[in-house]
Image 1 (cartoon, rainbow, N blue to C red):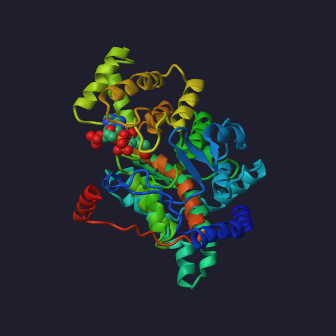
Image 2: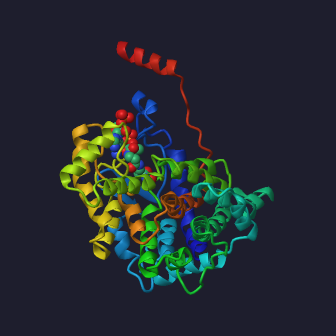
Image 3: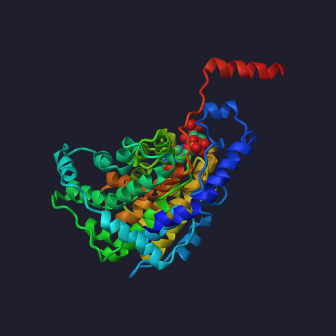
Length: 438
Ligand code: HAX
């Protein structure tokens, strides 16, 4: 299998680099830690290792060293579309090289062969109470698939450490193949009462299949949006909640189903993946209040009302980024090329003009610019996917691509169980006192 063979080729050199860093240079100091960082969510402490992606505060995400515009340009485009094959992105994340069309299609073929979902998963989803949040349904489906984990089974059989990654890759391909099918089923079942299993068409790629299974009206446009959406949401280095939760749980040698389930639980938080549903809600509130796109002045006042009521403006701000998120820009470009006159796109564009000024005037947010969530719901809304609480599920399908690539490499490089050290409040106070007399 193509990903297996390529990782095998690269592995000896990577293992040697990690060995040298750890054994020969293990004492070299990388960063210092302040009291503020310990109290403040470990912000900016350089303490995680990944080569899959890197977020530059002044530039945004780079996947394997490539910016989003570079990735969109370089990856092979899906047949009949303008966006890259998702299989090509997975190849890039896993292998660190731009694939040929054949290599991208080889990953797509792996997914197609693994997309079947056991019947009990559908039954379990249908047995859940109707008001269950779609993220719970999605997460339950992931957990329920754990019984097919190759990693768990081989671990029980005494698998050797140097081949953990092979089982991790097998599980990751199975999981990522099944996620769009599960997501589409949840969408059609929860909102339209459809009980039939979605079917994966072997002639179509991941993006087209998803659009088809979702049954949106403009399937061609939605297939391209899905490819873009999954690409943009795949990875954002290792420190964000969903990526870090997956990595942390995986470090205990839980298999990828357990690990990704933890990541999904983190993604469900309103300060992380749930922000996209809140963001579209905020835009629609503006739209309803003013019966359409408001004047700049009205929007300015509305944004201040939100802040004064003690709420955040969803879709704005970021823990690391200090510029407009290039994932926002890529989606805005997509919308402006295809449906520039859509009311919500015009509104999102005006918000981009007005909200940074308001946040700067308030003076709290370190980054007053938009993040990925400021526009993603608007695009879904255009294609008729208007069930807000489903949006985080879409994010989850994309995020699986990045976190599983990280999971496979973490096992391949023998990353140990994570165990940072904690301190008590008194200990920190003592350190502060001591620093005054030093
Ligand atoms: N609106 C109002 N206030 C904001 C703000 C916003 N959009 N963004 C930051 N602030 C405030 C913070 O609440 C914080 O206030 P307090 O000091 O009173 O606690 C202050 O500005 C400093 O925050 P920060 O250091 O700039 O930002 P953080 O690293 O603490 O938080 C967040 C980053 C993304 C969580 C934050 O900007 C936020 O809440 N944004 C709105 C929600 C959102 O868009 N989340 C999605 C983020 C992208 C993502 O992960 N998607 O999955």
